[in-house]
Each structure stands twice: as C-alpha cells, then as structure tokens.
Image 1 (cartoon, rainbow, N blue to C red):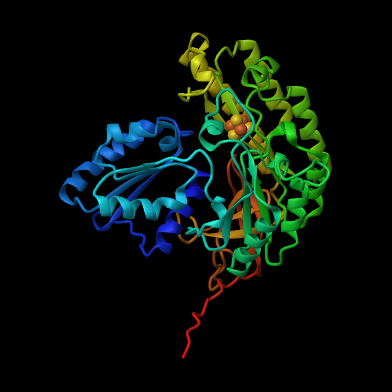
Image 2 (tube, rainbow, N blue to C red; image 1 turned 90 degrees about the horizontal axis):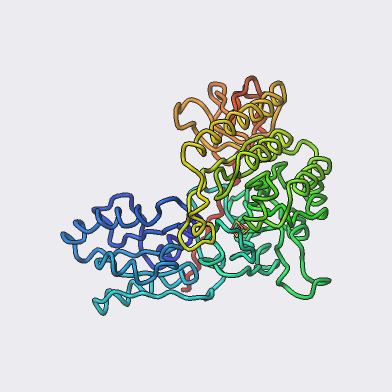
Length: 449
Ligand code: SF4
C-alpha cells in the first residue's frame, strides 16, 4: 500500500509538471513517503532528514516533504524534530502534495496538513508505475479490525471499499495501457464491499474477482491481503473459476496458538484457520499458499510456540514471511512490556521456525520439477543479465537462459520446463514464447486548427 502511495505521489507531482530524478543534487523537491509498519521508521526518517539538512543549507530552494503513515501518526513531531521540512502531509491527502508545496514556496513557511478522512479515493489519482506490465489497484482503504500488534487502523482509518465500477474502469484503462498483471490491494480484501450497501445488494470480493477477470487483456490477477476469518466459499469458487486469478493465496497465520491468537484479536482459532486452508486447497487446484508469522508476541510461551510449529507443519506453506515481534508505538501490544519475550528465546524459536519453513518450501518447490509452467517475464536477473527472471502463476521466481536470438521483453509470457528447485526459486529451461508484451497505448494529443 505504501509503495503504491509512492507511485501516486510521484504521479500527482509529474502531472503537476515535475520530472523524476535519481540525482539528489538536481532535485527541486524531495518527498519521503514513510511507513510506520517498518521497523525503526522514525529513526530512519530522522536519519535521512539529517543528511538532507546539509543539502538544504546549501540549496535553500530545494523543498523537502514528508508524507505517509508516520507523518499521519506523528504530525507536528516531524516539524519539531526537523524544522527544515517544508511540507508534512498524511495518508489521506496525498493528492494535495503539489498544492502544499506551492503554498510553502509562496509563503516561505512550513505547511502541515493532516486529514482524518480521505479527500479523494487514492486510486483515482495518476500513478507513476515502475513496471509497465504490472500494476497495483486499490480496492479498499483502512481496516475495521484491531489486531493488537498493528498500527494500520489508527493511521489508515476505518475500512472504505471502492465502488466496483470504478475499479473495473481503472483495470480496463490499465489493460489498454499495456498492463497484463494486476494486484488488488486492500488491508482485508475478503471483507471488500461490506460497506457498499445493504448486505443482500453489496458486492462481495468474489464478485469483484469475476468482474475484473472479464477485462480483456488482463492475464494475471493477484490480491493482498485476505484475512483468514473472512475467507468465504464464494471467494474460493471465484479463484477456482476465474482464468486470470492466479493459484496463489497469501493467508496470514500470525500464530498457531489459540491463546496467542486471542491476545492478538485475530478473530479465528488455529482449527478454523486450518479448516479454511483445507477448503481453499480442495477448491482451487494446484494452489500455492504463503503466510506471515510473528515469533515472540508478548506472552508467547514455549507451549504457544509449539502450537505454531504444529500448525506450520500441517499447513506445509510454499513460503512464509517470519517476523520477530517488535513493538510499534501506539499499538496495544507495545504496552505489553511486562510480557515481552527474552530476545535469546525469540532467536532460538525463529531459527527452528525458519528451518521448518525452508524444509516445507523446498518440498513445494521440488514438486514443480519436470512441470512446464506458464511464466511472466520480469526482465534480466539482478545477478546475471544473461539469465531471465520470471514468475509462475503460483508467484514462484524462475530463472532460465533464453536461446540465442530470442528476446523476451518484460511483460511477455513464455513456457519453461522446471529443472531444479531451491527453497525460494526455481531453475528452468526455455520451452517457447507464448505471448508478446502488450504495447503501451500511445496517446496522440488532439489540437485544433
Ligand atoms: S487485519 Fe489486522 S493486521 Fe491486517 S491491517 Fe487490519 S489490524 Fe492490521
């Protein structure tokens, strides 16, 4: 969500006449888009602002703006700790960034504007995408849950779903612009539509998947993140039946202990989670499942952790993002200081968990060896430009060498036979190109006379 906000901040500034640059020395405006879900977000922000101070002293005309959820949360503190910041804006008014920068330039004063509500639905704003063929599409902002470790509800507000027609229209525009892969974004996509009218008329996430699947030119649909407690049979059916919806489900577990899940306010038990997972695997052929797990949540006992190991062993994930608990100021869990788990205990648990997850991941990745997979080309591998990096429908990273003379553009599709596996990537041999990358639509300006 934060990355997509960065794309939109860049988009509104470009629409206002600025040009992007990687060279700080050339920049007229520097925007820091903060994310307080990241560890040490404030230290990183103030460290970067410290570096920028000497640049600002040399070039007082250069403007510095701070946006994002840390700005939303800390408001005046940013200005107090870094008086050389020209503009502070929050998560709800990123569309105002150009106007606030102009106001500050005209008055010579710092401007702070933090709203509690969205002034425009963010996806209605232009976005400057880093990748031509792949795009984020926001379907919902905010969150109505209250997970004890999470700062999102207090910085992003309560859940607001975007109208389905607006989402489909945006996807159609993206497709016309050469995009063939979209990722639907929301804090809890499974509850999409709940706020869009009376229950019998409100669209569900499954309806949205079907509507977006019908857009011509979209070959792959992904989404993040679904909350396990709201994973409905209708969503599983839509995932199974929609051709473009990829066979990949990210289902955050967080903990396998019912006691810890209750303390986290997650709204499900381990048994319920495993039931939903089993239903998804039964309903969607060849489904890859990934997850998030927090180790060392306050009060997590050895027994709680063993429950997590048991659930992970049963789930056999394709991949797991494992996090050591770290308190986010302003959350309920950050107040549970008396229950914080000793770092050496957490480290030992983390080692055991990652070893187990790697064994499962290798098992899932090795199961692909010998299969011919449809892959979407991302571009040359970062380590070796002669090797292509691509993704399978299950979102597994694949490396292969194209035959001499064959050029595979980012966004094009091919088939590759998987030859070997590691816990986090696959090696393959090229079989054939299947679809070229769509051309970006060229807009010809209409002039009179
Ligand atoms: S569902 Fe929980 S973890 Fe996810 S954004 Fe909402 S409060 Fe945070």
